[in-house]
Length: 329
Image (tube, rainbow, N blue to C red; front, top):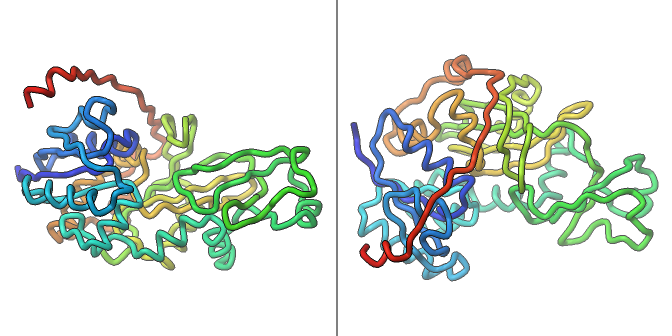
């Protein structure tokens, strides 16, 4: 069994880092020595305790120090692969041409910029015939809308952050519907779906798995059901024919009278492990194809192996840290 050294950055972001660590430990093809780094000290996040070795480094905001620390870890530990589910990390890896992060397969800055801006992304999807929530630009548009509820969301955001729900009666004539910072949209009452997508180097989808959210907290799903929603799968095929995004990414929809595009994240979802558990180990497949340039099974082969209608539930796991122990490291 081949041994690899993996570095997970922002390892204290427990939802995605936890998924990475679990998938690495479930590998049938590789044995991993797992490193983690973060600006949060060891013991103050589970991620720092679940890796084989943890490095405490400067905050991302100190970009020069941050990237220098990562380069030092890579060199000292002879790291084979660097992974992260943080968009800012991925952009930094691409801009600094970090070979171990496979920077040439990280989406271009323009892709991140487009999908981080929820107004631009919404309008881009609308232009291509994909249903999106109506954006309310001014009070006249608001009066014309029949929606009883609206959402106010930050334009530049990810992970469904910066969203608040407004009742129609909360909105007055002087309300700022649209600005460089916020947009207002009609609230879509329906079921939330996250679709995990795995694409080959050229951006061709080999796996598209919709999962219906049954319960979530702070934007992270902890109970879902894997559903073969053909309409969602077809919409994803359309979107990925326009935007070739190699590797692991995800799209969120709300299904009401029809599917509505909510956002696309050109990175791994925090709960991608749910889709991986009912199909293939995403990280094993990523390493085989992107690191070792091996062919991966066809779309039809992988999709036929998916355990549709499976219900996935997640749970908390405790870790314990004694500061005295770290003095001996």
